[in-house]
Amino acid sequence: MAGIKDAFSKGITTINMKTNGLMEQNKLKTYISTLTQQEEELYSKLGRLMYQNWKEGRMDTSVYTGMMQEIDKKKATIAEQQKKIEEIKEQENQVLGTAGPAVDPNAVFCGHCGAQNNAGSRFCFRCGQQL
Ligand SMILES: [Zn+2]
Image (cartoon, rainbow, N blue to C red):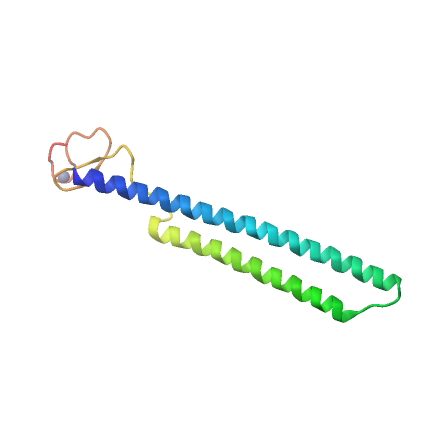
């Protein structure tokens, strides 16, 4: 019976980890889209400012540089968030395996040796014990 319990809690842990990972990834993706929007706003602000200044015959590069540095900062923050997403995915793959959880919810676990048997099995494939 311990085998079933173990497999069950292992399954729950797997689901929790997947859910947490997805939630974390969604949070990061939302943050990235906010940053991308802010970046776009900076581009248009910069463009409008340059145009207005050009119209008025007073271009001030120091102001533009400040805004461009701000855009660079946004880009760096976006890259950081994307890296975090990659790290979460990598972590998941390491713990869960690329193929995802191998635990079949209908599998029968041998009370004698703990082996995972296919659903409907009457005898353990490993030790021959009746299931
Ligand atoms: Zn067995």
